[in-house]
Amino acid sequence: MTGLEKQALDGASARYLDLLKKALTASLYDESAWLVVNSGSSWKNAVMRLLARRSLFLVKRQKFNAAAREAGEDWPMFGFTMAGTKRLGNVEECVASVIREGVPGDFVECGVWRGGSSIFARAALDSYGGADRVVWLADSFEGMPARTSDDMADPELKGSAYLEASLEDVQANFARFGLLDDRVKFVKGWFCDTLPTAPIKTIAVLRLDGDYYSSTMDALNALYEKVSVGGYVIIDDYNAFASCKAAVTEFHERLGIRPTLHPIDANAIYWRREA
Image 1 (spheres, rainbow, N blue to C red):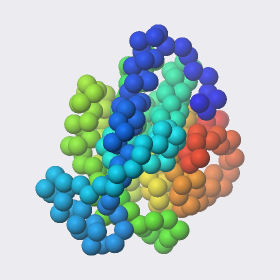
Image 2 (image 1 turned 180 degrees about the horizontal axis):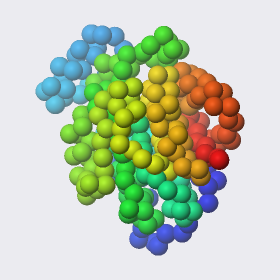
Image 3 (image 1 turned 135 degrees about the vertical axis):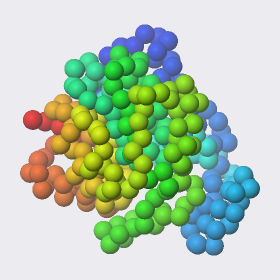
Image 4 (image 1 turned 120 degrees about the vertical axis):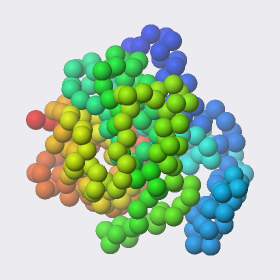
């Protein structure tokens, strides 16, 4: 837990959200820890793409590590999010807080992979009484962009078949959990092209998982002013990607703000927007 006060749920709702965390992170299945071999050299990515076209994967069998999955430190072979149960718990706490305190706005996630964190946010909104709020998912839905000169300290992720999830894939994942409706909206394309004109009005919880400098900065530039006072900003990769941390630090310095950064786990942080 991250220290946020969370209102009590009835037993059935609490059990539902707890089970959903485990299902979305694939923590229910030991086999989810098997490592999908997909990144590295260009020839290896080419082989993985060929296998994927035939519905095949190359995997390395390894033992399930509950602590790593909780902290989002492994990439599940299947499942709907790499965030881990601690970060999903943070999403729940932030959602509960803005509903309890009447902070206006929607939930927005930039960088969604298979949609698991946003699926959980939608379920949490319903459970805590936020049925009037929308969940927005912004992503290229084509995988990661290429690194820029600002990202050289971090690994190249463009071309990794494992990180690619189409818009149709993510919509189907919402439907699997009975949560695809008109309160779930998608913004497809690179952040620099789509977010400045996206029809998002007010944000209560903004979750950024873009990894790189430009992805993080583009999202902050376009959306931070829409975050309500008392709303939350979550940075999934703050301590995992040096370029992401640099973008957040530079953005704060440019605005002349020094928000208190709260750790969620070893990699992710969040802060609350003040007046």
